[in-house]
Figure 1 (tube, one colour):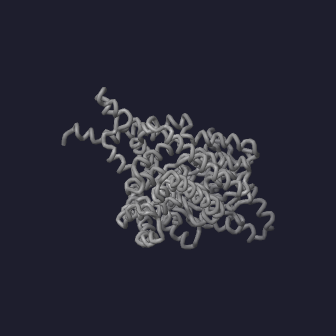
Figure 2 (cartoon, one colour; figure 1 turned 90 degrees about the vertical axis):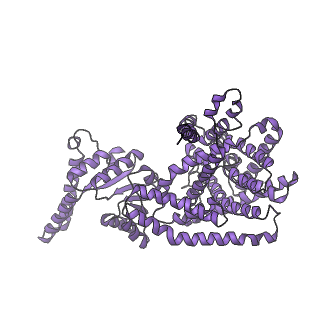
Figure 3 (cartoon, helix red, strand yellow; figure 1 turned 180 degrees about the horizontal axis):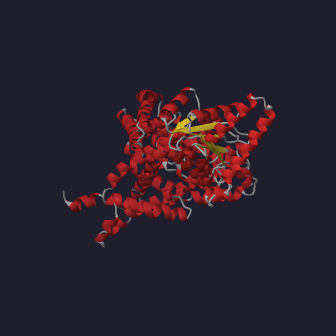
Length: 591
C-alpha cells in the first residue's frame, strides 16, 4: 500500500480531530457554543474558505478538507445519534407531567410558526411544497445551543426555563414527522400537498410499525444478554449496533436513518438500560455531531452574504421577528409575564440545527431548489450565532422580575427529589421497601442484570449501569437527590462511588454500607456522611435480642443500643482513626 496515499486518506479525519481539540476548549473559555466554532472551522477548511488560496499557496491544501462528500456521509451519523439520544431522553411519564406545556405551548408554537413562515414564503412566489419545507425547517430552534446556555445561566428550573425546554421538546418530537413528510413529497416528485397525499403515508406508517414491533421483540433481550457478559466493550458495541442498525433498517424501509434511530431511542427509554446507554453513546454523539456541524460549515457558502446581503439579512431578520413575535404572543396567552415571555422568545426566535437536516434532505429530494435552500441555510446560521446574545438579553430582562422555581410554580412535575440507592441486592431492596413505606421517592442502580431484571418485573425503579461513573450517577438524578445510599457488597466499588458522589455533591447526605469497622473508616475518609458496619450492627442486634430475652426492660435496652452505636460512630469519625487525614462529614457537622 502506498504510504503517501494512506496518510492522505486520513488527513480529513486528523483535521477534524485537531479542530475538535482546539475549538471546543477555546469556545467554552469564551462562553460561546462550540457548535458555532465547528461551523466556522468548516467554512475555513472547506472549498469556500482556505481552498480558494490553493492557486496562490499550494501548501494550503494540507489544511483543507479534500473529500467533503466522504465527510458529509460520515457526518450524517451525527444527526442519527442526536435523534437517538432525543428519543432516549423521552418517556411517557415525563411527557405526562409536562403535557400542558409540551402539547399545548410547544404544539402551538410549531404549528403557528410553520403556518406563518410558509405563508410568507408563498407570498414571495414559492409553491406550497417548498414553502412548507422551508417553514418547517425555520420553525424549529436550536436545542444544542439554547439548552447549554440555559444551564450555564442556571435558568433551566425556572418557569421560563421549563417552558423553553417544553417548546424545544415538542420541536424535537416534530422532526420525525417532518422527515417522513419530506420523504413522501420527494417520492412524489415534490408534488403539491393534497388530500391524496395522505395515502402516500401508508408505506411509511407500516414501516414504522414494523420497526417498533421489531424493536420491542429484540432490543431489550439483546442488551440483557450483552449485559450478562459483564463486558464494557461488548455493551458499547451493542449500543452502536442498536443505533446504526435501527437507522439502516429504517432506510431499507424507505424512511430516514434518523427516524429509525429516534424510534429505537423511544423503545429503550422505558427500559432498565436507558441511563447506561446514554452514558455509553454520549461521547459518540458529541463527536459525530461536531463532525456534522463541521460538514455544515464546509458546505456553507458565506459568499452569499456578500453577493446577496439584503436577501440574507432580510430572511434572518424576518425569522427573528415573526417567530419571536409568535412565541412572545403565545407565552402571554399562557398567562406569563411580559418579561418571562421575552426571555423565552428571544433565544427560540433563531433557527436550529435541524434546519440543516431538513433543508439538506429537501434539496436532495428536489423539493426545495438548491439556490434558495442554501440562502435560507446561511440566514439560519446567522441567527444561530446570535443565540447567546439573545439569551443574555432575555436573562437581563428577567432579572427585573423575581425568579420562580419549578417547585413554586403551579405546574405539573414539581416536587422534591428522592433518594438514590446504589446496589440493589438484598440490602438495597430492603432499603427501597422502607423508603416506600415512609412515602419517600427513590431510584436504584445495579450492575447485575439479573437483579435489575427481577426488580423490573416487580415494577421497581431500578436501572442497569456502572455507578462508579459520574455521568451515570447524574443521569440517575444525583444532582437533585436528597440522599445517596450505597449498599454494594464490594468494598472497593463502594468507596469509589462514595468518592465520586462526594466530589459532585459536597452537600449530599451519603449513607454507606461497610463490611467492618476498618472499611467504615475508609468510607468516612472518602466522604460518607454515615457508614454502617455489618459486623457492628449484627453484634448490636444480637445484644438487643439476648438482653430483652433475659428480662432487661426494652426501653433500657434500646437506649443502651443507641448509645453504643453513637460511641462506635464517634470512634470511627475521630481524625486519629482515619490516620490524621479524615474529617467529620456528618450532616450536622457541616451545618
